[in-house]
Amino acid sequence: MYGSIALKLGVGFFALVVVTRLLGKKEMSQLTPYDFVFAILLGGIIEESIYDEKVNLLHILFGIALWGGISYTVEKLGQKYEKIRTPLTGTASILVREGKIDLQEMKKNQLEMEQLRALLRTQGVFSLKDVRYVFMETGGQLSVLKKASADPVTPEMLNLEAEEVDPSLLLVDEGEINDDELNAAGKDEKWLKEELKKEGITNIEEVYYAEWSPQEGFYIKMYKD
View 1: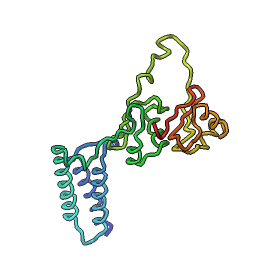
View 2: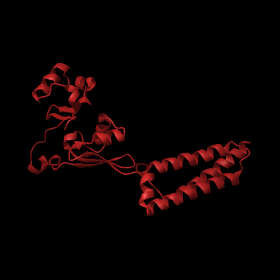
View 3: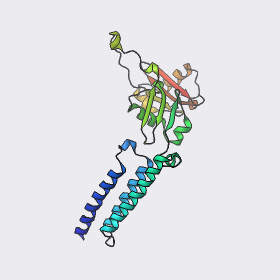
View 4: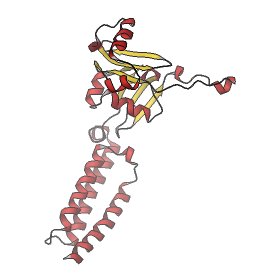
């Protein structure tokens, strides 16, 4: 029994490698929902076959070859016909357009503000005010186009000493005060409300998000913007 399992596992592994090579190479960030479905189902075929004594090596190879052939065919059809490709791979979503967040696209992609900020930080963007366009690609990664003002002449070019800027803190997130970020800023709710009042804001629930940093102050977006 153990020998049979080992043999099936070994043959299944090499068969998977061959099929994967034939279907082409992709980085994890380039994988589409269709690719994940393919991988999960193919792994399931191998898993169920290994421990079923009624399934022999030929059955395993046939299952892998059949599923690989189906996937290859669908992949090629998707490359040729857009009507097939779009449902399989999806399309990029524009989360930020001309500096304004698209709330519908945020909901569609099940993204919260802090999740978007975390993804932007991986792209070297620490404040939403520096962003002109943000695209969420089909693989889940972000493509960011910064505002021209976010890439100014560097102090080194002018032989000036650069001032360090702290990452902004999200003090208001979707109409609610973020106590953790407020504490990290060394401020309290009274201070926040007073500062927002200076900006003409009396109802925090109308604020979609409010960033703040010691050097640059507030950057606020309202739901109605």
